[in-house]
Amino acid sequence: RHSRVLTVTQTICIGLHFFASGAFLYSVGDAENIGKAVACRAVRRFYFALRRFLNLFITFPQHTRGNSIKEGFYTVAEFPNVIGAVDCSQIPIKAPSGPNEVDLQVQVLMTLSLT
Image 1 (cartoon, rainbow, N blue to C red):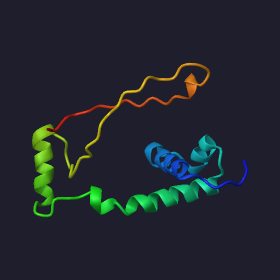
Image 2: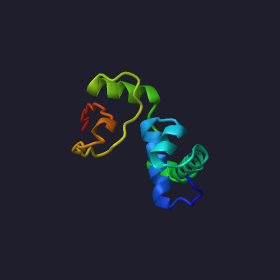
Image 3: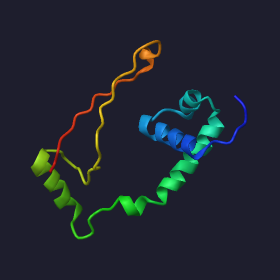
Image 4: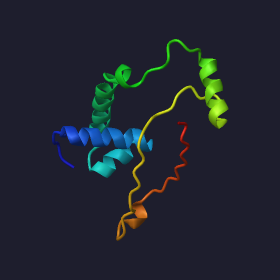
């Protein structure tokens, strides 16, 4: 490991890795071949950049009370205490094969369309 400046792309990847996996900074740093302090600074930069767009992409209805939103989600899908949902696309990927096959962590995703 040596001192080097991270690119914007590397900073974004480190931030996404940290927040998506819930891993410790040590794990993120090891995966990217950087130290914990560098990973911490990258995650911090990513977080502050992301926070600037918070109000643009994350909104809550101002005219509807929280309890009626919860009741609406429960009526549609029987999910208790839900006040919001994230709209996204899921893209299936093929698992890699070869010597790094055991490094793959598998997560089971269940999807419910509320539209």
